[in-house]
Image (spheres, rainbow, N blue to C red):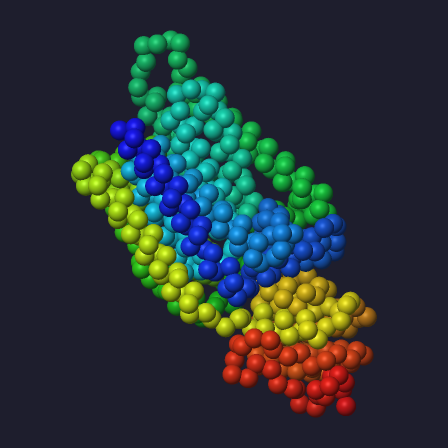
Length: 525
């Protein structure tokens, strides 16, 4: 048994390594909006400034920006994606560790295979680095430590595990504010285990009561949570960001944005909802959850951990549905609990001989299929996004000291242009919520610190026609420098710059001269 268990442990490590290697072909994929936008925020977050993160504002927690800072310091997008790839491998091992403690090594293999496949699914846009993906290692190991704390008979080891679970629970939230999965799992599984233990009488007076034991675990978890809050809080304040501002961005902003979206709903929202459901269906996520439910009904899987897992799945589903935008990467939040559900279901319900001989082969086949899918997707490279092409074109035509405002979308434009933004909002929704009448943008465009370059990607429904005031200022103070990806790039009248030219393809005619614009030095005739 021990040899077989060791063999299956090596299988988990092999699957985790495969999960990392599957991401390598995507290191050269075009930059996504959020990747570029968060990198732009991270690069300039080095001290106090007029906005939340120095000169820029985004509704995300500080630990996420700190991870992007690390990626920027190590070289940028490629380094960031390598960090995410290693994080995926760590998350696979964490989820498998939780399953192994609950149901044994065979369940761990099933969980590892499911996690490796789902974390690398193009259906989830999982190849892009985002908050859900970077929070996944903290969630996976946080749940694993919750399981260890509850099941560990040694009180000191259990307390250390609970302390670690508290650390990781808060870390996950400080990467993505809705990732409360460890908290939900720990509370529900802990309460269920306490209720179960309280019903069992013990003849030994030396053993502590269930209430005392779980009280100590709760205290240890709370201590870990406070320790992480203090650590990240100190880092945040040292970087010039107020904790009240972070709290407002993480939660109060979400309330304000939800109110705004309810007033001006996106007509495409129902289409996204249906598509997101189809994505989950096609990825077999629902099948894994159904299999766990079937196992519970057959009473082959039961206990406090199942209650905790069910609550975590319910929370993840609620979190995805309340996300507002219904983007594919929201589903990454469900990967860890779904993978654990798959491992528990298939590791406990199959006949022993079938498990022992066929399950490793089936899980290996899942990883191979995921690998082939991702490699096939990598062979069909998509064109660079418009924001990347436009940003690169501006970078080639810009001069030291230039600035750029990329208005209302495609937040990666500033990162690819290598230029700072004097306007703090790189994304559309923060601009609509934080600057609803565009007072900040109008004051900027009318003042001496107006940007060298201006690109307007969209015309969101700002009230009172204030967007027309911005466009009037552009018409009076700027002239067209060129058109890249069918978007006009404007430059200030008092500077001379070359015409921006596209360096990669995003449309049939990526770059043409704007009407009345000299192709030599870009002077307005």
